[in-house]
Length: 87
Ligand code: SF4
Image 1 (tube, helix red, strand yellow):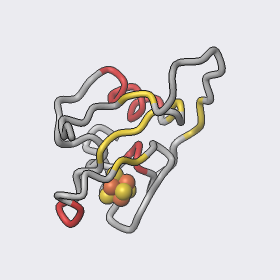
Image 2 (spheres, helix red, strand yellow; image 1 turned 135 degrees about the vertical axis):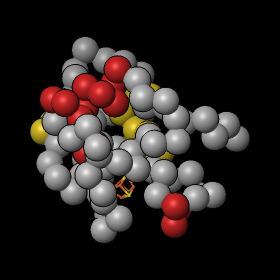
Image 3 (tube, rainbow, N blue to C red; image 1 turned 90 degrees about the vertical axis):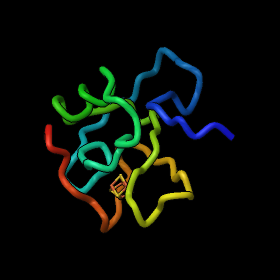
Image 4 (tube, rainbow, N blue to C red; image 1 turned 120 degrees about the vertical axis):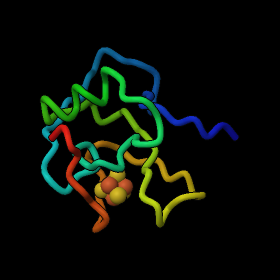
């Protein structure tokens, strides 16, 4: 299994982009969302625009989940939320 997570589409790209607003407490604005790899344009866009296509998933870098390589969507969330420094 490859553990070099990056934001990637959950499904093949379609013409139906489902952009949804991302709110405080949701993974897309969490500092642990994709924190184990270099920032990329998709991550920066999610944080700055506070919206995302919900087909994207990335790995949660929360230390308590280390080893599980949990993948989450930008609209997922948990009590481990910490605001992204760029949010
Ligand atoms: S699952 Fe929790 S800790 Fe992980 S990115 Fe989402 S809100 Fe942050």
